Image (cartoon, rainbow, N blue to C red; front, side, top):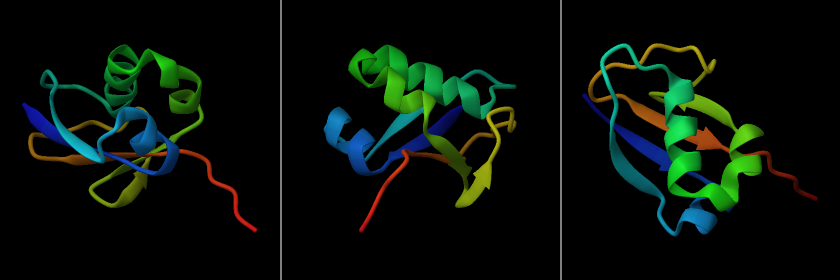
Length: 81
């Protein structure tokens, strides 16, 4: 099944893209997106570990079950002033 991965802030900058399609097996969970991102961009492994998930615009746990067509965002920690 295919999902869309959305990246924000430093993750998008490090990857050089804001979104990309990703094929995941049926029964995949949000954590699989983190693993795929770390494999694709190993230099961002630590940042991925500190990022949170949103599935279809709602914050989600790493064990959230994914479905075909879902949009999964990884949101890194941000600071502001």
